[in-house]
Image (cartoon, rainbow over all chains, first blue to last red; front, side, top):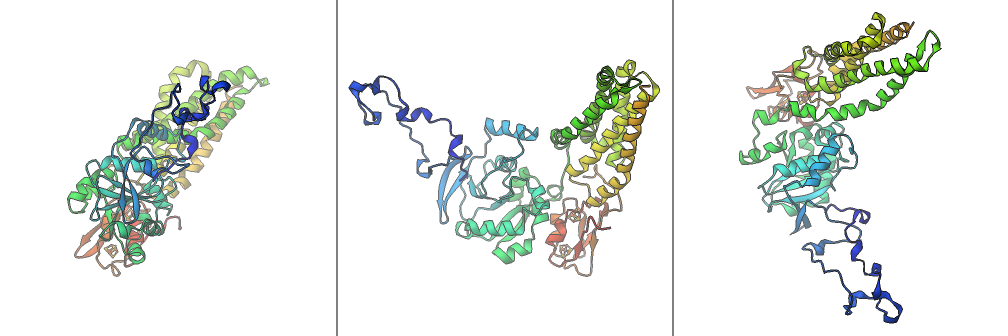
Length: 402
Length: 72
Ligand code: SF4
Ligand code: SF4
């Protein structure tokens, strides 16, 4: 049962009889208990809720719980497969990085459809996006869903951090008394959780056999009907245009703080000139350099990730250089009149390209195919280039003011 | 994932074919189809696709596989 603190409730303040003001409380006609059904008082209509029996003081039922079913291990919430408007809005907010934390589901056992003791058990993470993704893929399917406590992190990232782990799976199986709910001894673990799980250890410690399900939740119905066999395409990760696109707001968000600092530095550098420091220069030239920064950001954190497979080279840092070059060449004509010198133009070009290169390299952390050893190699090679480039461009920019 | 190839010859993946007992689990858990079963034994067929996630390592019942990112 996913339960929220009482403070979140907003719908029942009007039902409090003691808040009623007006003639009912006058001194010559004392009626302190409107619930006693005295004439002359309007009482709130009674509310009958089908799940009232599951109410607990201080808790609120989650919207995605349709009803409860009794099992030998106690009541299990049965969830809906359909997402409502609020789920969808929250998904967008989370994707945009507006709310990334605390978007989670209580760990434990849930049901979907009308599961019975022979139904499969699907293991998942307690990140609400993951949970929503899974339940919406299970329309028309009856199964149990075992939500592990991954501290609001998705399956793959949690498995990499070993919080989607053998231990957590074994503990959760025991905590929900899974053996009392199902008559079989197998759990379906998403393949991307395999990094954190040892199938053999789970079997030894809990008696349950791990069957690795497909990478993507929407392949689960096909996987189940094919006798729990995943074909090759279900076993391989993808990195589609859409998958890359939804990552970009987070990339931008991550680059925001350092960009703010960079912008400040740019304005200060831009103020340096023949008169030692000029606020007019800081503003005028600062804006020009800021446009270079913004273009570098867009190139490295948005365009390079989205256009990833179409940009030549395997090295992300170099992809960023190429993309940044294209972008800055498009920007230059627009700001040409304000740059004033070749040195200034060179400074802006180098700066944009290096910002783009660095952010593009940063994106290796978000892809599902870059090996840490490869990333390390790339960083050793390109960080010196990027740092040198930025310093050179700063020097050129100051020089160009004289 | 053939559209996405990362740097070559950097992965630290090692398969000890002597130890392999041919269970096939590595072909199931690998998200990049790095392994294939040939004559009841696992073989690395796409070394450069390995992203060193370690899924094969933690699931191989014979300790036949290793990856060691961050070493060397
Ligand atoms: S480490 Fe991951 S990508 Fe590499 S072979 Fe093993 S499972 Fe496949
Ligand atoms: S998981 Fe290990 S034992 Fe099983 S096939 Fe792969 S290498 Fe061989």
